[in-house]
Length: 636
Image (cartoon, rainbow, N blue to C red; front, side, top):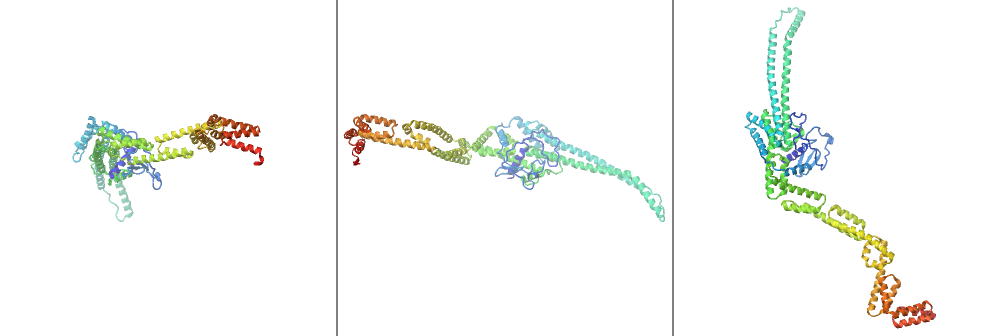
């Protein structure tokens, strides 16, 4: 748990120093060391906060201390959620743009196993060996100091060994100055003893004159005062010089203590910076040089409260050089173990767990040789899995479930430990809900409910914008809309032409077109009812024709023709039946013609003749009854 907390704090602190070799961390109330490596520009990029902290307590953010290198509060890391909280903002440790960019760059980079890389690591190892406990003789310390300059020439070192060498050299110069001050204090101490001796001798050598007798009290008092003044004048030159010497000694002691404290603070600030930059090999080198240079046993870190809280919460111990040394050793061991776990999981095709273990190890030990020497081919497998995982997250975020489904299948095939449950559940749920809305949209389109149609299409689009079924349904509905407009135009044209037969022959098309137009629905209903009546009569007449009842068939058609004279098919059948029942038709028409001329007798004779030709004739029967009423009105 503490290592996870430490890793989170290291990563968050690295955000502010851009993983680079920026200026030294500035402890509270102290000046920055003069000698520093070339600083890289700080990177201010950070992930958008998942939530903003209000800065609890009175004053909120206004209570944050200015100039603190850790912000207004100490970094905190929750290992359960991998959420890093710092300065009122929250980040996911591995889910931010800065980390992803650096991690992918590392995964794509070649392994650092060249002769130059190996030589550099050999130099660092030699330095650590020279400074190892029990081995740090003056000769070994000088040799290690010489190797610092050699290690600083390698690009991978980023001149950090030179910074350590500067700190060591500065401490040595401080100690040389302290030696000079000590020698000066020895001379001043000799002068002080000399002045004290001279003053003592001067006082004892001073001979006082015989004073007045005891009876002469007034002259005795004046005499005593004159003698004291004479002695003070004689001693003044010694007392003044003695005061000056004592003041100089005290000043030198203060300078000596202050220069040593300043030298320690500068050295400790460099160690803290190296630790937060995750340069743990350099931390070990620095801590061992620190013990070799400062031999008074005082290893407590003079840091600000936030830094002390970070180290205390991470280790459970007060911050010291020894604590930093042991933490660096523990991180190196943990990274080595994480790399071994990564390689084993990779051999088992457990890419998800392998990528997580590598990301964790990279977060804390980016510059350690175990990380830098990993073969590129092994890292490429993790990189491919990371890219596909990121692509899956992006596909789910933009609701491209077709691509997401393909990626889930691919990841499940390549990584045996990939958990497909959450992604699959999200995809299937979106598909089902989208299909439900599309079904309601189709129903609304058929029923002519335009408002429901639009709302359901919008809902289906929001759930799954790139749904292939949505595209097809939208095209169908839009095509139906175009077809509807054309059908309405055709219907209006046919109605104006009274071409009801054409409307009836394509009635389904026009029924769908007028679904949302009640007035046209009424018109279309009348046309369909009329044409249904005509078709019924034509079917009846056709059956009568099959029985050779041509006169009866003609009569049925003729009555309907009188009601609907514009139907082409009815006209055609009427013409055919007129030919087939020609004698009966001519007789009926002659009788009707004479009836119109009011020739009652002749007309009656012709109707009787027609009845004789076709006894079941309704036309003949009706004519006879009409004419009979005219001839015999009283019979009615």
